[in-house]
Image (cartoon, rainbow over all chains, first blue to last red):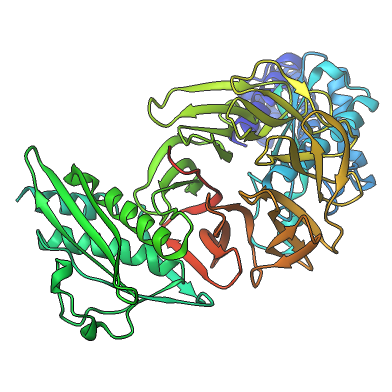
Length: 181
Length: 417
């Protein structure tokens, strides 16, 4: 998770740098209304330019934020002993599929997981199937086969360890984890 | 003095992971009344030996330990039958120090009903092997009194999970004398003993996905035997130790393959579009039991090691997992999941009947002791994984609660050859 947050931050930084190098003075609201009225024309023009730059940077930031928010939702969930990707997760799948399609150098690991209601080995198989079906859905959405590795953790890495449905529902999932963005 | 140091080391080195509490419930249909007399010699060593033999025997539920009530014979001539009413057999012995820190343990088992000597042996060993000698004595007593070999000298393997650290542990059959074979921050699964007890195959996620390793218990050297794309798991040894069955997803679904024990000469055994997993060789090496959901839900099937059609064995309501053959090949034990709980159950291949052995709970991964008399499995107490056993007739149950950690994936080892 820490790694993901770090790469998301890097992504934001890169997006901001690429579109519009941010300047300290742009970010800080240094001018007051009193100064503005007394300002000469040249200074007003500079202010306008600064405001435009700020707007562009904010737009780029907003776009990157939106993309980040979209990719941050990176788990899809399954009913008990079911390995087919559910309709409820179509948006999540499409967000990642589109990102992968438009970023050919991006790479993901799809990690399949299962709840504890089975043997650890059966659940390893079930998690592998869930990862495989998630990969298939991503490829159907436009990602390429070579971008996606599938692995299974079975019941070995539960998010929640109580014996109840609320917990099990969180553990029956596949996580889409970026190794390169 | 040396003895005291040894005892202190044993007591203080072990507790970090030692078994804290053993809770036994139930009793055998017939309990043989036996008296164990503390051996002559160093009192502390003799008491340690007596405790281990006593615990071993009482855990089976087949013996009633009768207090010698102050009597302490060390020679058969000192035993007057009249003083031992109700006792069928008595164990006596001596511990004598030898050169180079060794001890000679002489012991006899006497049948007071038939007035016969059932056992008379001398074992010489280093003092730090008294624990092993004690288990060996318990094995021999058990064998003379029940007719089946004892399993107290055998070892068990399991995985412990404690604060994000996984350890593959090998321990005595009573859960004591733990040794970590592997420590990892990634999961470890499915330890499987080689038939000679010298190697363990297991699944480790240390390279961020499931791969199969074989590790020597003596040299600690290990070999990666399966690292195909996807998951590599569920290793099981053939009875002669030459081959390993395992499950690979390299050709899409989880399917069963057999390879040489070094991973060479891989051959696919099952062909289904389902999850086929948890292979277990029959004692004659001719067939495999396995778990499959090819019929819609996970159940137990049997297939020839040569491949071909598989036969479904379990049809009960609920799901069936983790089959392990009884050493005689006539039945198998498995984990039965029904109405939200797991039971340990036995399936008889002749009568085709299933018998549930335990009250149920979060009970998984059963395996037989090599004499077929007890079953080791994983269960839970207050949300923590622990080891438990049940006698193969379901009468005697035992829980072994460790001080810390979450214990999973136990597997009973073979007789040591």
